Length: 79
Image (cartoon, rainbow, N blue to C red; front, top):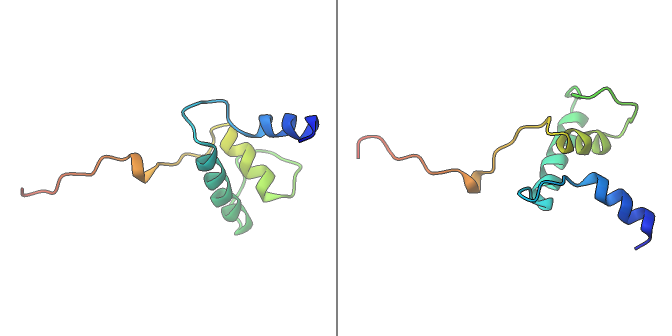
């Protein structure tokens, strides 16, 4: 890869080692779909591309999400 592409990729992905790159991409893609459907951005941006806006929102931690595979199953009442 060229040096400029690698440099750009490093800025797009969060630095937190606890975050999965794949999770980041999935969350950003879902947010981009929300923006395309008419949701308002949390950032003032000059970009018209929802993918760019959503990636920046996720990178800055403005989008809250939960990972269903990490959640503890709730015990059923009455047992």
